[in-house]
Length: 150
Picture 1 (tube, rainbow, N blue to C red):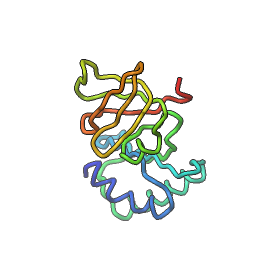
Picture 2: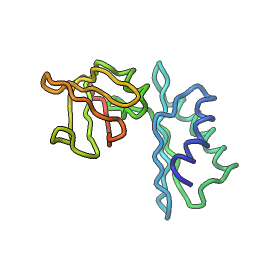
Picture 3: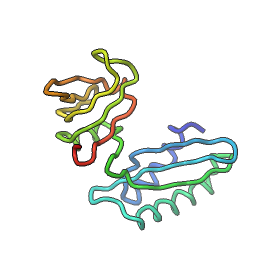
Picture 4: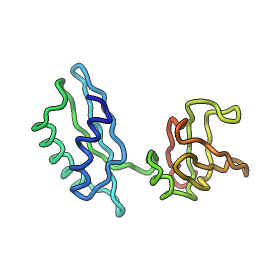
């Protein structure tokens, strides 16, 4: 089962509980398999939220049995240096400082660190040293918030 298929199976359960599934990492195969879920809600995540989602998703995976191999299920909050993945994430954090890594060089570089000025369905605009850079979402490798803008 692919990560997208796993997300399609798990996401409705997470949303029914009142949370957003912000990220899903699946490394399956062999003895050390892992399914890591990152959840969020507007007022933040606490340990009870993680436990609630873990129990519900674990029960779902036991019933559906989409993964043949052994795996560990982890549920956590996005943390201060949260990954931004969806357009809505970028729109929510406009004005914040980001670290962005591109899959391919843009203007001769792959790494950008600066203030997120704007975002839409196709691009984000990050200001680095006073200069705006338009970065295509389709070419983004990772984007993370910088805690405290440091």
